[in-house]
Image (tube, rainbow, N blue to C red; front, side, top):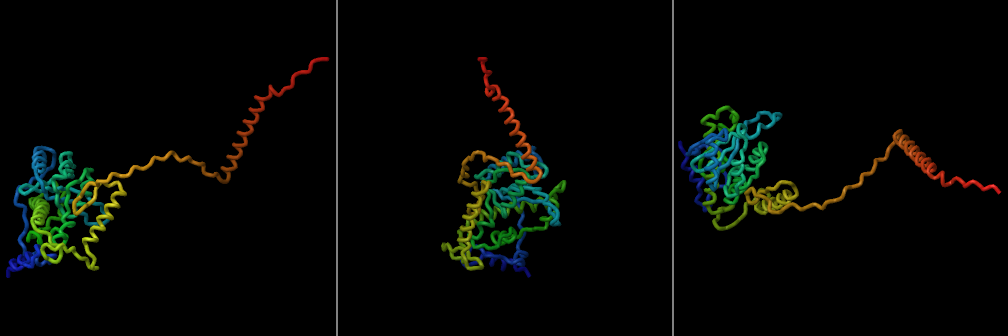
Length: 323
């Protein structure tokens, strides 16, 4: 018996809340699959496809963002690093094979452009992974996991957020496939493009929906409450303040503010320059100390003898004259 209609009606509640707080696995299984509807382009070098990609991505205001890495199946093995960077617009998704081409300057410029919002989930982990390949200035990134609470959503995985916000199911069958394979399969390409695209779709759906934290009453800004009864909004503000203070005391120039990866405004304090600290000789011990004492005594004797030799002519008495 198909109960998709019942599930969809629950995911679109009539209580005034725009979304349900959480969703069960069996409910997700009844939903239709999400699939990127546009053109998927794999970019492996800085040729014509790369130039076309930069031109298209630079013209967008919101992009879906994600990365993929070759999986490791043992904790003893090191991570393989980011193999694929996905950036999706409404009708095109570009898959950049980072292991083959690195992160060229024009692509870094897209990742550093504050005017282009890059939306993903667990964004900081993805950005750190990319920066292990090459350093760049990450600006304009939004993390869905840090903002969905404003709409009363407590689930944070991409699969569950997609079900709650879009009433769609994301397939994860290709997640643990080999992303460093010589050629990406059509299934891998579809999975990678869809994962980035749904983040863009969710973000735009949230922005078009009135915020309604926790209890579903529209227009009442009630913050979400944690298991201990404390306001998560207050805790998040405290956490953001603590994070900001912590980041200000480090060399990192970025901080998450209200779910957005942002450059710090405050400039680091200049430390006063101090003069060189005079170094004192460490006290010698044992045979070395005795040997040092002997050398000092010899130096003193040499100085004494040299001073006596130089003073001798002035100390010789003049000869007496004969009477």
